[in-house]
Structure formats: C-alpha cells, structure tokens
Length: 533
Image 1 (cartoon, rainbow, N blue to C red):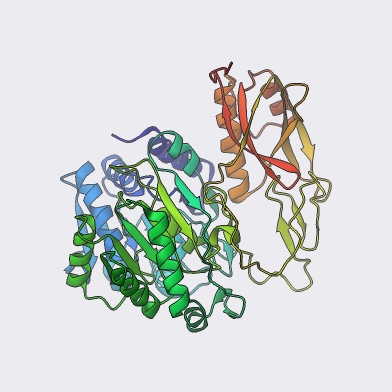
Image 2: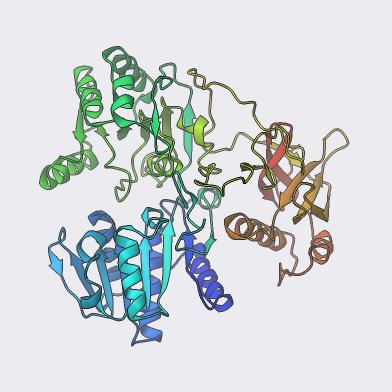
C-alpha cells in the first residue's frame, strides 16, 4: 500500500505523460521518501496493464539495485524480473522487467533489444553531454525503439559544473516534485536534522578548485592535520553526548583513517570504510555498526548513495565540497525516522550548510558554459527572478543579495533544516498577478496580513516558469488552494483569473516565514491552527 504522496507521485507522472507526447521527466524525491516503493509499483502497474511492455531499471551501485529489487519483490512476489549485474553475480535477460547495473549492461543494447521504459535511479549521475555509459546505452536503445521513454529519480536534480539536470543538452525535459523534505517531516515519514555551532573549523582558503570542486589532494592536505583532527574529534565527542550511531564524512582515504584512529584513541569504538575495503569486510563492519558494537563509521566518498541505516543520530561533515548533490547525499543519511530519538544532529565542520543553504532549500550550482557574450545571471531565491550576476538587489521583489566576501573561516549557527522561522497570525490575504520588472515574466503574488503591528508578508510564485521552479510553484499553489478550500482545476488559466479565484478562498490562520535579507520566504501555512492565549 503506497503512502498518499507516493501515489501522488505516480498520478503526477501519468498526468505529465498525458500532456507530453515526447520527452523524458525526472521525479525529484527526497532521500528516505521511498523511491524504491514507487519504482516497484510503477513496474507492477505497467506490466499488468500492458503485458507486452519491456522495462529496464538502471542503477550505478550494487546497493541500489538490491534495495530496488527487494521492494519490487515485496510489492509483487511473482514479478517477472531478471537481474543483470556482475557485482550481484547474475546476467539474466529476457524477462519483462530487467534490473541492471550500468557498468555491466552499458554495451549490451543488441542483447537487450526492444525497451519501452527505462527507469534511472540517482538520475543526476547521467552525463549532460552525449557521452558515458548511460547516454551510450540509451542512444543505442533509442535506435531500436524511437518511442522509448526515460523516467529519472533523484533527490538532487543538479550536477556540479552543469546546473540543473534539465539544462540543455540534458536528457530530461522537466522535473516533477511531488513532495519535499518539510512535508515528509511534518507527516512523520522523515526525521528532522538539527545543527550546532562548531568551534573547530576546516580551512579551505588555500585549496584550489578544478571542475568547480576542491582538488582532492590539496583538500586532504589542508584539513588532515594532527592538530585539526584532535580538535574536531574532541568536539564531536563533546557534542555527541550519548548518541549511539555516528557517521563521519571525511576528505580522503587517509583523512578517514586518521579520524578513525583518533576516535579509538579517545575511547570511541570506530571503524573506517573506503573504496578499497573488500566487500565482505565492508559488510562485516556495517553489520557491527548496525548492531551497536561500532559507534562511529568514518568514510571517504562511499557511504552516501545506497547506504541506509535509520538510527544514525549524528553526522559529522568533515568534507568541504562545492557539490550541492554531495551535500544532499551526506545530510540525507540522517533523515530516516529513528527508533530511539526524534532527530539527527549534524556537526558541520566544513561549512557546507553555509555554502549550499538549508537542506530544504539547496542552491543549485551554476550552469556551465553560458553562450558567448551572454550576461551572467543568478536566480533570486525569493521570487525566482533572473537577475544580473552583479545585482545587489532583485529588481522584481527587492530581495537583497549577500555582499560578495572572502569566505569566512568562522562557521555560523547555520540552520540546516531552514526552519528558524517566525510565526504570524493571518487576518487576511490578497492575491494578484505580478510582472517581474527585469524580465517581464508573469507570476502570482500573495500578500499575507497580520495584526496592525505586523508588516505584511509577500510570497511570489512563478507558476508560468518552465522546469523545476515552475513545477514547484504550481505544486505550492495547489497545496494552498486545497488548504483554502478552493477548487483550482487549471493553474494554466490567465494569472489574474487564478488570483481572483484564490482571493475567494479562506486564508491560513498562521504562516511561518523566514527573513532572506529584508524579504520573506514562507515555509509553512496552517489552517485551523490552535489559538494561543
């Protein structure tokens, strides 16, 4: 039985295909939302409704293949599925459903033959360019069946150095975001993250970048020093208290071993996993960790995708990165509900929260390779207006951009969940069409009014924007309409009509908003909120 948001995901996917005769969508779903359950139900529905269909499910790591396969067999014990993966030890073709590792199957298009649907988990790993194993296999299968469609799944729809995974010449046309971290936390399906200020801090001011990311050898040399390791480990122990399952992301193999050794020296049972750890040894260590006999696992770039242990209650980020995707994957290890506590503590020694924003509102990386002569732009976080890179104030909504500065070494009390908001009781609201002064793009704008002493709060929703920002805005408006008890059947009506319809609805009793500069980002709206005396 699927959860409501999981069924909503499938419904929105089918609706997208109804509207689009060609092209490929990508579903954006948070870590821990149950992508494997959605994939299983999709496979079951497609094969039962269209028995002649051929489905190919692609992943890039063994753990994801095994997780997805387990959920398919849970939903559908008699599923006609074959597995093609050298790491799993099976090479089965010919079933209606094939679960495969891309490394094993990328050169097997002729043996696979006709495929109707490709499902790609962790779709952000697919190259933007027409290169790599995924793109080669998809291109060859398209030659066999030009009507082939690809459905992506990811928690982080962007690639370092390329921007959003829908930016041309990407394989995906549009993103579909049926839910988000905040909704799943409110529903109890995810656990919130909490962050504390750390005194120890990793200095990357002298580390150069290549391809937009820190050069690994320089990064490890900068952060892996005896003094820093001693300070970091002692602070982890101090702040961890009685937490029982710690996960440390380190900047390289030697750094991971050195942090592990220091933990053991100070009385914390720890072990280390790297890419060189043999499979059986890795399974033994993870088993000991889950059994509580190892308190901390240190690792270098291996326990991000495909590693899930819900009871992780502390994450130490010792790996500075310019990749928002890696940040999301690291933080995501702590999002699953726990058996013994209601949250996971994140200790950010690497300034990744300050670099990328709260986990609920991550800033995508810049798009690589703007056309020659094109003015560089940035997107206003408040209203999604495209602004000149040098702009200090958004011309559409007045949002103040942060002043450029040399990266500070002192970490702030960063709010990793983006929940440090202010509540306001709402007495009225006003909807209207808003036109961005810089671009001329139309969007919806709602103003929330509180008590006489409260300043109005403005919220901008670019429902006409293509891609991710438009999809997210339309979903937000649909959620507001539902809460306001308004029948909103078509968000593609003229925006003045949509604004008139929404204005007739019941405003929320309370909103929670956060200041971004001088302006606001609304994070929560509540109808029938309990009144405080």
